[in-house]
View (cartoon, helix red, strand yellow):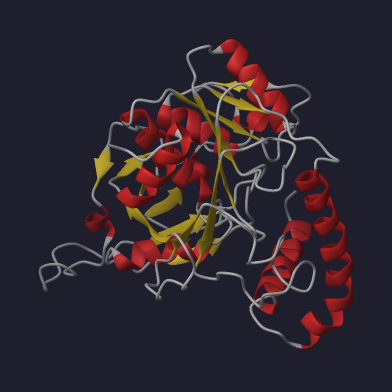
Length: 354
């Protein structure tokens, strides 16, 4: 989707996201529909809890990294960091994902060379960053079963999203929030919640670049996303510290080069998180917020006047064929609390660590 229709959709989504942060007239008007949503989703959860609907064990323990709110919260960097932590703890992990935005008729493996349109941007990023087996399918049970059959050494599955995919039996549930937390506290469509904030989980992570205090919830940990050196899209071996994109003289106090025109663009669930990360590094870019999972069927940078365009890794996997020397990719690393890693490992092993 592109052009005026996409712009209108993006504005509507942004407006609704703002409304979901408050209990205004629109939220109260939609509250009766939220009651219907709560009844239907609650009945489904109860059916699985009672065993009327069956969850499926796939042959390996499962850790689900998901959210109870609509929109991106930082799950993908969390999955990547968790995979690395599990590998360091002696596990051999694999990852399953829905493959959002791609037509996936059957469980499909993802490699570093798979086109994003065939598997989705997030699974491709995970495959490239971790090198572990990644399989996609809207049916996560089928994806996990196919992964386990193809990779007999995999001894733990990490599900990228899928918290509400109850058919996939799981051993650990991690819920990720960003600075918006639960918004106005209402369920869809009056608020951003897919499930109540009181929903049971093993741990909560809060991705908060604005440094607000953590909520007083059990097993709640800060999720810190740290930017790395930017790399050039056309020549990935070329790297630059973010400070080189900062305003001249920002570090030394005296200008040493002409001002750069820097634009930051992000097609993620909360573009402002990316922009805040860059500002915290001393940059003052113009910003271009794009819809989450923006497909780049058209070039949003064709009319952009900039010396450098900074994008996220999630955007970069869809830009490989572009010949725009201005584009630089800013990777982020999620820093997981060691207590969270210990909690997950203990759950998987079924006993406290020695």
